[in-house]
Amino acid sequence: GAKYFLDWLVRHDELEFTFEDEAKYKDAAKDAFGRREKSLPRVPPKGAVDLMIKMAKAQQIYSPIKERDVAIILVLATSGMRRSEVQYLTVGDVDLENHKLFIEKGKGSKDRFAFISDEAAMAIRTYWDVRRWEHNNDSPAFARHDKRVSTNHAFMTSQAIYEVVRRIAKSAGLEGFTPHKFRHDVVTRLVQKAGVSAAKDIIGHESIATTQGYTHITQEELQEIHKQVFG
Image (tube, rainbow, N blue to C red; front, side):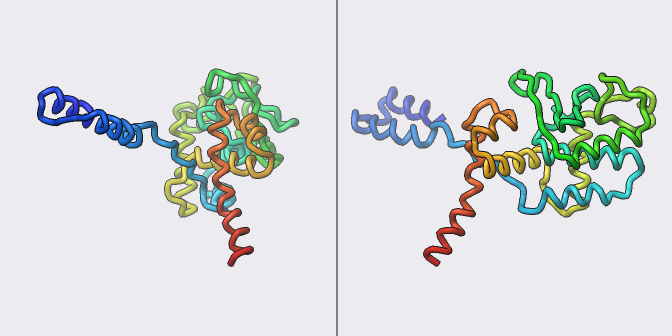
């Protein structure tokens, strides 16, 4: 908009534009209209993920929805998977013995494995036990349990997973906590413990630049070190 208006003024002799002015304009335009630096990931507050897990377990809701929700929260909290990846997990994708989940055609159309904790694996097993299905490899790992699909074993929608997280976050008093916050937390922890390269491969980022965006979380720690030295 501004560039075209400036060009119009010059063409119609409404504005005299010298070579020096043009150089200054190009420098200013580069700053104003150039590619903006990507915003830093917004990691959840300290203790928020643990609180989400606690509140999921404390839900007053009927079985097997409670067990399913606990398993979903623990999978999100320990794998860093995207909710669309959790949504389409099948029983055959879940390796409870080795704590691995197979993600077929994830973002970027790449197959990969995600890893979960012992507690998450146990939660999935508990959920499967209480839902009392005759499983096959194509059955949804996490399913709907409303009356309309009681015999169809239907997959949850992405929005349904979002609502599970939103509902538990509300009970925990956490505003703006979304499924992707779990992913931010997982990447943050991995970067701190294992470094950027390992975190990239574990979490499934396409570009290492994305993972590097999470190194900012150590700035608070660096500031604390500086404070200890200089007061």
